Length: 73
Image 1: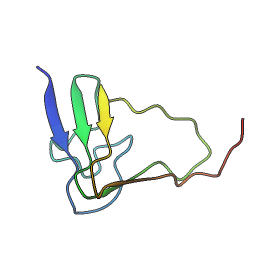
Image 2: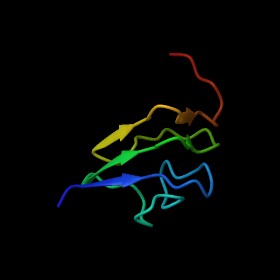
Image 3: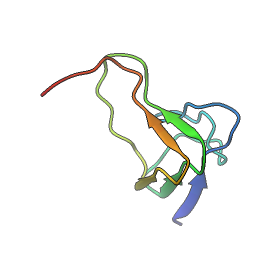
Image 4: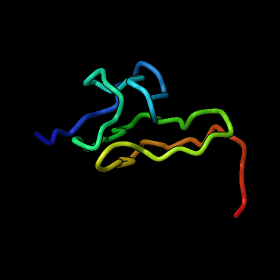
C-alpha cells in the first residue's frame, strides 16, 4: 500500500537510511517522501546514490543539501 512519508525535524539526514523519516524505515519504492520544512542531506561520501522512494518532494521551506564532493559530467 502506497503511503506518504514525512521528514521529521529531529535531524537533517535520511536520504538513503531510516534517518528521520516518520515511518522509521529507509526510503522504499512503495512510498512517496516529503521534506515539509526540513532539510534532507545526501550522503557525505563519493558514492553514487539513487533515491529509493517512489517520489521525493522538496516542499516549500524544505531543502535538499548535497553533502558529497561536487562532480561535473
